[in-house]
Image 1 (cartoon, helix red, strand yellow):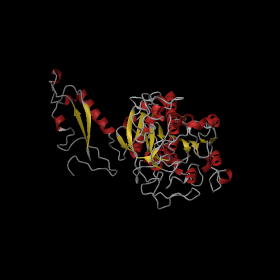
Image 2 (image 1 turned 45 degrees about the vertical axis):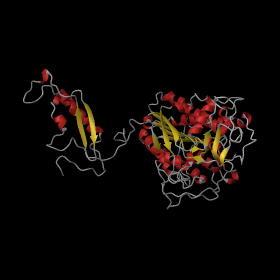
Image 3 (image 1 turned 135 degrees about the horizontal axis):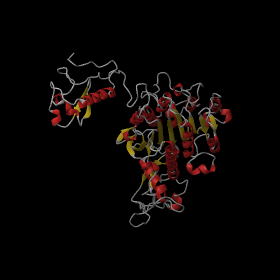
Image 4 (image 1 turned 180 degrees about the horizontal axis):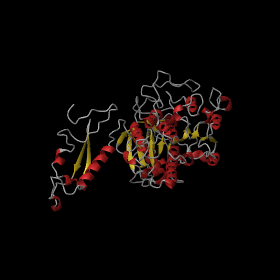
Length: 557
């Protein structure tokens, strides 16, 4: 072995080395030729290669002062600067991890403490909230020149959404990529890429077989293992693809009875990686927690709501119960506010259901009590469902409700963490849809009573007149690439008005005809915004599975 060279350690980390080989000296030639007092006004640079680290002291060209020209036996009169340089070099070696064979998470101390981490992580997911939907929602609520809360997030990026086997993803592999760092196949939840999607039986059970992939740890599971509190909040069923990807592992998203069982601590089918259980679970989907004779879909006779209660969870079934629930003893809260998905925000007033903002802030009431921090996922899930139905008005209103939840959460977090020095908040979507903004529409401003705004028929930006297509018929500002409402043949005689297109139940026209509720996802990149500790890592165009690495790194999990 060459003089001064050390082999790599068993763990694969570079062995510590004070400098390049040669004459047993530890400083690069450029520094050795300078007078030792050249350490003044220095900076330290680390040049790390495959198997060693160089330390170089960089300073301005040496010009000895008069007081430094008197030497005794070749030693400088003033040794303080030399000692300072030596101490700095020693500090850099220590920071580089010399003397340890184990790789470290950046910023973590030797005992695994998260010394400079985002103690809290809140991950917002607008399901199906593509860029055009986001733009239309902004116009809908505040006009073209207004701003949503998520528009104000300082760090932004675009995210690629394709899955392991498809150009256009569904929610299962997309959220799994965010949560595990692994791209998997469509329909598969938080499993390895070799997992094949196998549809469950009619009873909606059917977990993956022994030879069909392996579970991949999720951010929520990793956070739980580190002692953080964890929470899942959604307007869909809590067993639906997006929330399930945070805590469950199945080879098909439709295995919702199995997914529900993975949530109940100690029960059959429980996901032991969740330790004592997800601390807060709020959303819809009660049908997968109760047996068939109680109006549910469980064929095994289990009542998982009662099992959760027996494990110390405070249970809520409506908004009033959620706000009154006492989770102080156990730190556990479960709320199932609908048999299936929760209501669209446009229709919520007729129900006793909480808003997404209600659920997110109530979750924080519980999670913030953990001194180690928390991981919370919040999904605006019904944006996606309204888009599948080509019902733009409900999709835009649910996007606004999602944005309101972001604002309410930011306001609450800032009460205890004003500058977000301990909290990372990430907002993104799992995929796009086929919604488009047509033509050269005049600016409409926000939607108000009697003024449908972006939901109305298209008017020419120069004349203000209703625009006509090649058949001489009016058309809407918002349309879809595919969907239920496609006019066959000529559109001549189509009599669209603002009153028609601005109605709650109007379904926009589509280019390609699909079955009712079957408008598809789109493959366009989606927006990501971030704020708080570690947010600066999000920029450019990134893969969805790389978001996992950025969040995990910021939180030092």
